[in-house]
Image 1 (cartoon, rainbow, N blue to C red):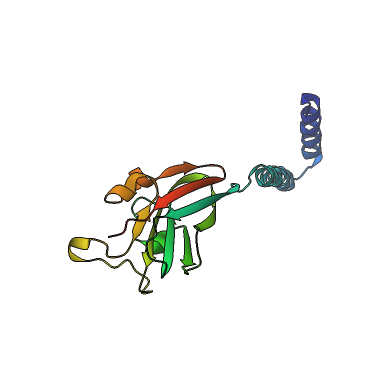
Image 2: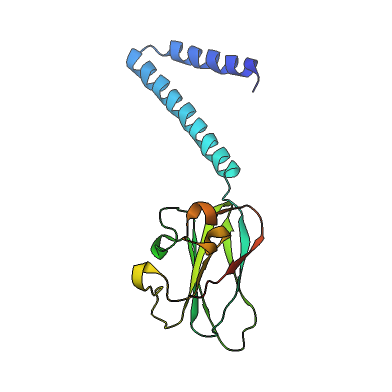
Length: 178
């Protein structure tokens, strides 16, 4: 808006207020004008905020699983964005997937839709269908397991497993067979 317009509005409001003889009525009118202006700016702010704010675009993460020795059970996959939950607090995972394994399967793969961010994937082959990674003495897994990144080669850590994701992407996870 041009400065002349603001000046005209201000002068008009001043003339209206000065023409009112009762001081209380003048204050009431001024209060109404201020409320009207405030409401107008709030509406404009809400409109522009809703137009400019968009949800993050979702991308496809394809997870390919290799080194499966036994063709049975269920592959349970969890995608994390929280290093404190990784790799076993599945209730805090942002995405969970299950793949029922059959003898006919030659390729084990699934897709997850995610927004851009830093993620890590952990998975295991639940051979006995009990819903958890069975462990033996000293917490060593009894069932095949794997993680994204370098964590498949040792104790899983979010720092070594995480990857930045901001476009369609494929990752390979190798199962460790104990």
